[in-house]
Image (cartoon, rainbow, N blue to C red; front, side):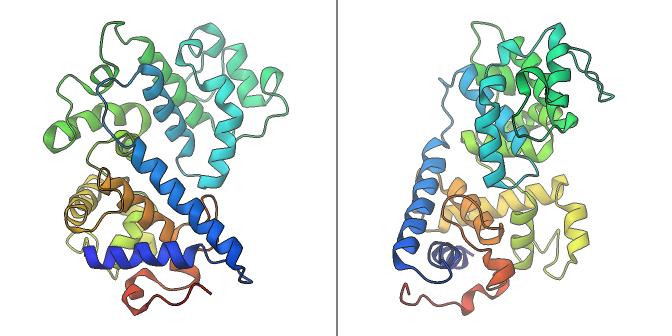
Length: 298
């Protein structure tokens, strides 16, 4: 499996960044953008005991916004919303009151959902479900004791990078942000996991890596129906950990984050970090990756 992954990684670098019509200068720039982004996400994926509440909040609210959207769209949206949502301390109180029936009671909450007042002329998705989760998370962050370590306050005093303690930490966060989004947050801050989103599950399924829970022949509808279940998540993370231990990582300090990033970029539609085509859909289904052999850059 590690050998297959390394072939996937090489193909993403060489083929997913290849412009059409071909331009060697643009290709080099795309590859540089991809490797720079990979370095960035791997560098940040370290579980730091000194992480501040503000650092942790950034990961939480941005991953809530990220869920279900294309990466390029979310990056732009987050930059526009950062002035309003980047401080959890100002997101509580009467003006942000929002009930679970989708009705905004506070002035700021109504402005957000209606794109009026302070949110006028800003382009963003007004999904009330995402918005309510951000406000709920902000209220929880407000309860952190001032002398507590933020990671312990959010995940519990016995949090750990892996094993049963990791899953207990996940259960605490999942109640607030959702099952897959919680794993996304945890992956990005250095827990020993990956994010089992639709693309990662689909590709690992097609490769036969999680046959015991999702056979390679599974129909698309079955994958979409099951990919957010716990047994799938456990199978994906367990398999990813085995691969991370065996592969020749470009970033040895964060091989799981490297694995997740590369795999998802094999399937996702064109967007940020130099990716200009989806290899799985447009070039070579991942289950045939061993048919690819590196060629000259042009």
